[in-house]
Amino acid sequence: MKHAQWREHLDAQKQSGFSVKEYCQAHNLGHASFQYHRSRMRQASDPSASVTGFTEIRPRESRLKLYSPESSWVL
Image (spheres, rainbow, N blue to C red):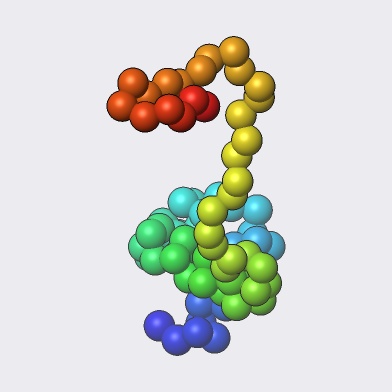
């Protein structure tokens, strides 16, 4: 199926009121394929949606201290 055909299915599903699962069953589409193409088209239309990487997580202050007997470091 071509890009334009998937775009038509994605738009039709939104307008239909059916869940993705119901729409896929009614139109003989694979649920995983539908999700894949929806994700790909979302990334293509919104470049920030495809940004991947790490998110810095900082723990709250803790009373726990880590000590290494082999060296002099303490966290």
